Image (cartoon, rainbow, N blue to C red; front, top):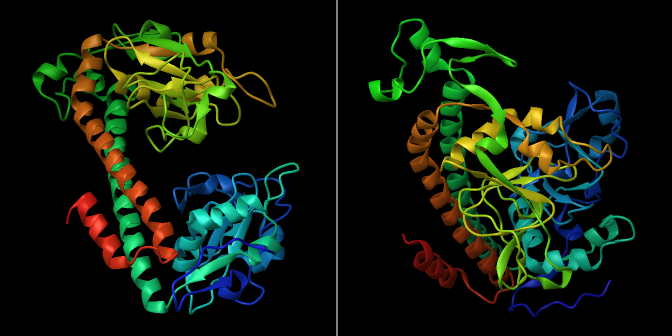
Length: 437
């Protein structure tokens, strides 16, 4: 295979991925996993890759007898995992938590040579050079696919060991900061979610008052916003005076409309486009495309909701103005309580998804979403919830922006460091300038 490779500094060299791994140790996983099991051996699939880590929230499990045939890809921790089919080029290092797991056919497993280690291989595979080489040599006849021969022949830059060590420490320190910000956000989101569940799902304040107790964790003024008894409704007992209503009574629903195909660009010109989960981050959108012919727009605080395909129901909160394409819709609070709308959809998602039509390509229509039944509490209770959770979600947004800055910094520094164009002391100075000590 012929590669057009940039020159390296003296003392550096290119080595194939195969030569950086244990002999004959690069392979893909379970080809025919059979039916998913409620108990069995978990396998890592492409959809489990998220931001350089493996998300354990939606793991498929297979029969042990099937998994036993694929011992070569059974994980012990420390392997480099790479997606080979579909969304190719996603990289993660298997943690010790994954020991005993296996991987799907679409995931490659690389056992690093001890003298190289997983961190260096993972950094190289993340780099724009490797990503470009992988994608340029992928088979795209049916689905984008990287075959193992192309993968094994992939060239990786290899500087002296001390240089590798310094680059790994710098980039992974940025990764650790990003991870901490995301974990903090997950905690803040969990607090907002727990409060919503207590007030508007479990009705804890109402139950306390009905039993003659003062609701825990709130002052008298907030407690006064909740009734002290329940009444029957078509969907069971609800706090007295609260009622089930269509979502459109408390929110405006705007279905997306994609702009002209030739109006897209990736250069940051125009309005950022949100057309589906490719542009979805963990809580806020990720900007990958822009358009100069925006028609329907989101506002800060809107819920952006996937309405088509296998990802129907995935959602993010708009942190600014975005053009919303045909694959999504906007749900906008009518009373200035975007957090209330977000959690209302969260806790009722299973009922909303039950409205999807189309067995091959599920979708939700505007009437489905507008007519979705939600429990309408008093406006004062909604506003009180918003007042308490707004500072939490503002911190989430601030942390998200910091994580974006660090991610952009890491993405900028990585290719220059592993090609020798930038030395570590210079990169450390740029990090200090960008984020402070």
